[in-house]
Length: 411
Ligand SMILES: Cc1cc2nc3c(=O)[nH]c(=O)nc-3n(C[C@H](O)[C@H](O)[C@H](O)COP(=O)(O)OP(=O)(O)OC[C@H]3O[C@@H](n4cnc5c(N)ncnc54)[C@H](O)[C@@H]3O)c2cc1C
Image (tube, rainbow, N blue to C red; front, side, top):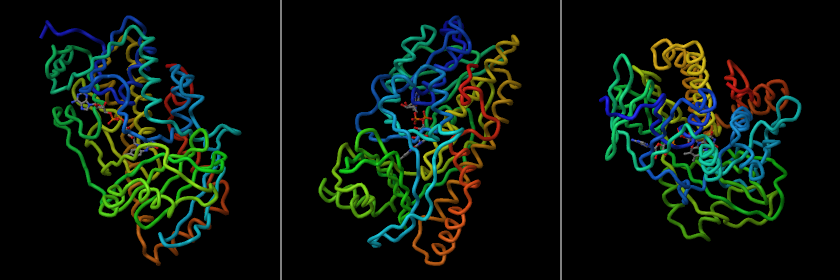
């Protein structure tokens, strides 16, 4: 065990959450604290077939700015300044807007930005390239770990183990390390598939996002730079399979049936991708010298575009509790440090997962009774600007006990 390379923190998983945590810790702990990020895949460009563009909340954007990641993204990020919501049957020729709201906070700051996954990944890698205390290890699948009083040893397939004060699992929804830690999960699969594609349209979107609630699931039109939008479309699984098997012309026709007529003619402008959807929640976020962040800790329905934002909240909170402990000369992997993290993040994750699950159940159906009830509710919301503003602040990640990084402050 003594032959293992020694680090302050080892992070397993170099997705957005893992890379962002490495950036944040490198800044908070100083350049003498060694941090390793190990991913099972080569740590280079994001998967070329991943067309996803994420709705990043204002809090997440403030954090990326504080970490110096945002400048590389800024010119490609589309601010979302307004959101329109409709609720209709697939066959309806016209989808009237039931709720429309101004999507800004704090006197005009956009509450959301749309950012391509690939650009975010590249910007995080470039930012890590400027931090000499971080080592990136590709082709290093984490297999398990052993924790003791003095530290934790992480084991990888095909490479030497790494020793640290704390091991963080950022290895996604099917987290191998969560399993190795013996942390169970609550999980259910949705009978729906997430379809994503990018389209170009004739007319400008003017920063407006559209959410069409349709019986198969929400069909979101997320504005991107140029006259482009990312379609994030939840569809009933069998129908999704049929749609994905269509050629480009057939696939485009399905999009046109659901699209926003105000944007004029539309064409495909990127690959299509699909994701099975589930809700999962780890029964604990920490164990002995071990913590979960991002999808390893929780996975939520994409109905509100909040999964990654929750993961970045974990990152900001964990970084802050580690930095506070380090400054007091305390053990950063001690139960007291990790319990503070768990108390901070667990309730928010569980409430968010439950809320998005309930919203999906309420809206993804063709019941006339339910549609009448929810449209009445949306009509009320439309007439309550203060409540709308509260929802916008919540989605922007600026309510509750907000970690410093999400407020745009250094840790
Ligand atoms: C269709 C769709 C649309 C979405 N839209 C949004 C949105 O608009 N806004 C938003 O906030 N969220 C959105 N999400 C959610 C978001 O995609 C996820 O929450 C986010 O990508 C999770 O990031 P992560 O880093 O935690 O995990 P991942 O991105 O899954 O990264 C995990 C990493 O760990 C690595 N790994 C896996 N196993 C191991 C191992 N054993 N050892 C080492 N490395 C390992 C993987 O290679 C990967 O690099 C969406 C999700 C879907 C499906």
